[in-house]
Each structure stands twice: as structure tokens, then as C-alpha cells.
Image (tube, rainbow, N blue to C red; front, side, top):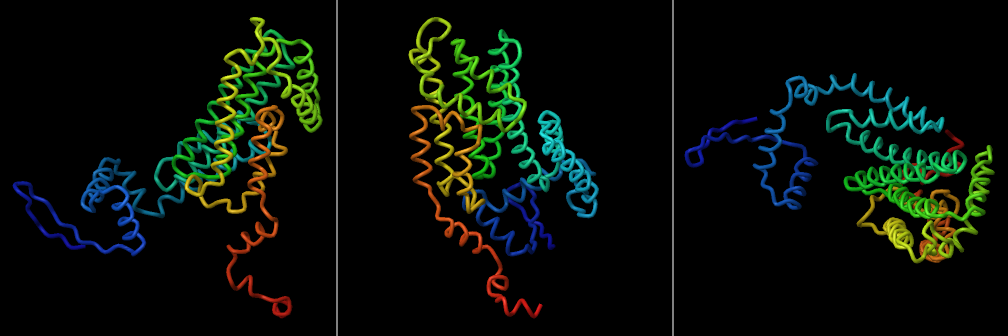
Length: 338
């Protein structure tokens, strides 16, 4: 590095001449083009930020070996979080991922984003557990539990939006759509007072077996999706004449908008390229049950699915395109030789 003293007006300034890798040079050029910032301003802002750090933080960011201990702790934290996640202990998993998100340093940005996504996922399942408790517990607390479930969904959507604001991703978009679908469903279930309909939902959610409970819930909502607008609210009006219908319509639009955005390249990352599995998942994911069963939402979901059909061979070719040539070019005869 060469330093040369220079003066601009009355303020003394130092000229820094350094060599950087071509990759960093290109990134700087792209950033300048996108923001209009000069090279001088970028470097000055970076230096100002660096000097604002504590000495230990400065050394930690500069000396790569010092970061191994932090990486080890982060991996341990991730292991515990994934363990809780695998056991479906959503509140425990949420706490672990929240701790993981607190890891400092720009080099942990990927782990923090992953932690945000997993927290959003946990909140959807926490909402489902609150909903079940509301229907299978004390009848007079159903609305209270569903209100808590809706708050959990709001947290899930907010975390998902934080993620895609930094790194748009198809799977995160799909989960945000799930959140909006559940928010619409729970709004309806909070407003229903018809005893026979509530009993059907209670019976469905009382099954001890997870798969049978899911199947019964689907059957219940196939009937509710057709008739809920004609059911009476607490004040005696039919639901389609209340604000519930407007809220549900808005949440349905948000859910479908996020599903459609998965096919818009400018709104998502390139991964996963073969995203047809998400389209197929829409047929079975319990979080999208409302979109599948509601008489007005179902045609929109069906249209989205048919517009985005993917030939399995095309999906397979997409996967092959990412393999190295030396893998694709090998023959069976060649591989027999070792």
C-alpha cells in the first residue's frame, strides 16, 4: 500500500493506493453503478464503520483464525436448533434459532437469514398448535386461542418478509403464502358460532393420530369452504355481509400474490431452480388448506397450478445442468474401469 499526502482546500487528506482482487473490483463497480456512490465515499464509510468497532471486533474481523471458535459455537447452536426442530418442539426450536440470529459479524449473515426462515416456520406450527388447543380445550376460550394463533402467523409473515427483503427465495415466498392462507382460515374460524360446524372442527382436531387428524381437518374444511359465507356471525348477520369477508378476501389476495411471485425471476433468487415441488406441495400442505377448500379461492389456486405445470423431464434436465461436465460425460463402460 502506498500513501501519498494530498490537500483539498484547507482539509488535509491521504490518498490510499491499493491492489484488490478482480472480483472485489467488479463488486465495487457494480455497487457504484447501482448507488451512484464514489469509490472514495465507499472506502471512507467502510473505514468509519471499522473504527467504530471495539478493538477485539476489529481483530476478529481481520484475523480469520480467531473466527474458528465463533464458527464452532454457531454450529453447536445450529445443531441444538435443528434437533428441537426435528422433534417438532416448536417453542424450543424458536428459542434456539432466535439465539442463532444474534451471532454478530457480517460473515454470519447466512446463518442469521437461515435462523429467520426457521423461526418463521416454527411460528406457523405454533399457530397450528394454538388453534388445536382452542378447539379441543375450553369452548369459551376458542376465540382467545385463535387470536393468539393469528399473532403467531403475523410474526411468521414478518420474519419471512425480512428474509426476502435481503435474499428473495421461492421457498420463503411459499411459506409467506401459507401464512396468509392460515390467517384467512383462522379469521373465519374465529367468527363462526354455528354449533354443528364447530363440533365438526373439534372432532377433526381431537384425533390423536397426526395423519388422521389432518385428513379429518381437510374433510371438514371442504364443507366449510362452500358454506362459511352463509353462516351467521355473533351479531346475527351472515358472514359475507360482515368485515370478515373483506379481511378474508384481502388475505387471499396476499396469499395468491406470493404464490405467483415464485415464477417471477425478478422477485426470487435462482434457487431452487426446479421449484415444481412447491406447486405439487400446494395440493397437500395443511397450511394452504383454505385456498384448496374455499369456493372462491380454489379456482385461483387451480389456475396457478395449471399455469405452472412442469414436465418432469424438463425439471430433471434443470438439475443436470448444474453438474460438472466430467460427471455428465462419463459412460458406463468408462466407469467400469474405475
